[in-house]
Structures are given as structure tokens and as C-alpha cells.
Length: 265
Image (cartoon, rainbow, N blue to C red; front, side, top):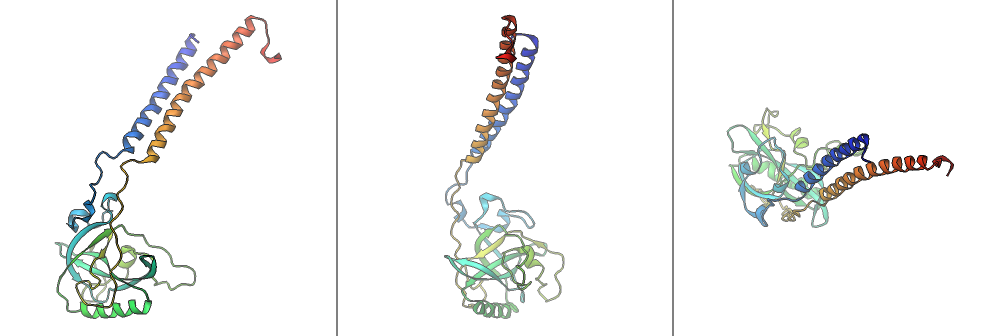
């Protein structure tokens, strides 16, 4: 085991084990959040622009953050989104385009309220679209949620049926406030669930959307810890492999000196 080639292999095993140990340490450092979100932080109402910028993804610690925003509803852009659950009861959301008060034309998708039946949701859409025609800017408070992404409708389903709360999909059906085709605007990737089922606009018979505070995430990522243990095992295996190779070679040399053919054992 003290011959040059085995010493070189030992150095190689040490280098490999060192890399594995470094990777394990990196996983451990990533496994523990040293600056977790304080309990109740999402319940503090913050301005929307402080939480997320238009076009940007919502960071995980901020999902469900209560925010406030002011803007103007766009008439004709209230749309029903199906397959929405309110306290385990399936129903429909009525959503709208809110033009945010900003330097550049900016919009955010807002889930205004919930209805159990489609007819009630459609009736609410008609009321809100009519009320938005001459509406003034309104303040809204709600939770900002990551978008669900667009999805193709099932085979045979209405291609215009919205089953996902996707601002990207809603954007394709939005208009300018004067009813003309949508021009270039900034759009928020996440959406807002309003705490006011009237949208500060009109009572359309909608129920408030059930949007409880997000659960406080654990500061420990157990998956990263599992990976760290794996890297430690790999580091140990590098030494074990060197030991087995060196020991087998040594035993073969001893058997050759003693005149024993290892292949005949």
C-alpha cells in the first residue's frame, strides 16, 4: 500500500473525497434558511410595487403576501375562471383587468369574487362590466399569488373556457379601456385575490374568495440534507474503493510469494 502507484491513487481518492465533502457542505449550507420570513410577515399590507415588479416572477417567501394597489377597472374585461374552490366547494371566479396607477400603462389580473353557479358568475360579469364603464380609480387589498400558467382545454371543451388563473391567458382576451385591441403594456405575472368581492365597484352577488394566510415554511430543507448525506457516503466510498483495490493487490502479491495461485483457490 506504500508503493508509489497506491500513494498516487490515495491522493486521487483524497481529491475526489474532498470534492464530495465540499458538495456536501454546500448542500448543508443551502438546507438551512438563516433568514426565514418572520411569522405573520405576509399579513402586513404592503404596496404592490414593493413586493413584485411587472413581468417579474414572485419570490417564494412573498407568495400570499397581502398587498394594496390602486387602479381602474377595464370594462368588458371581466372574465369567468372555472374549477375554483372556496372552502372545498367547487365554483367560479370572476376576474378582471385592473389598470394600475403607474408611469407606464400597467395591468394586473384580479380575482374579484367567487360564485357557486356559472349563471351567477356570468350575471356578475355583466354587472361589473356595466359598472366599470364610468368608474373612478379604486383602492384594492388582497393577496398576491403566483400565476398557474396557461393550459390547453380538454378535448371537446369550449376553447374559451378558462380553467387556470393565468394572467398570460387572460391577457389574450383583454382590451384597452376604450375597447380597442390591447396595446403594449406592462403586466404583472402574479395575480391578486381581492378581499372585497365587489371590487370596490358594485355588489354583483359574489362571495369573498377564501384565501387564508400561507403556512409558515420550515427553515430546514430536508431534501438538501439528504443530498448532503449522499455526498458524505460517496466521499467514504472513495476511500473504501482505494482500500479494497490496494488490499486485493497486496493479498495477491503475498499469495504469489507463498506459491499459492489465487486462481486455483
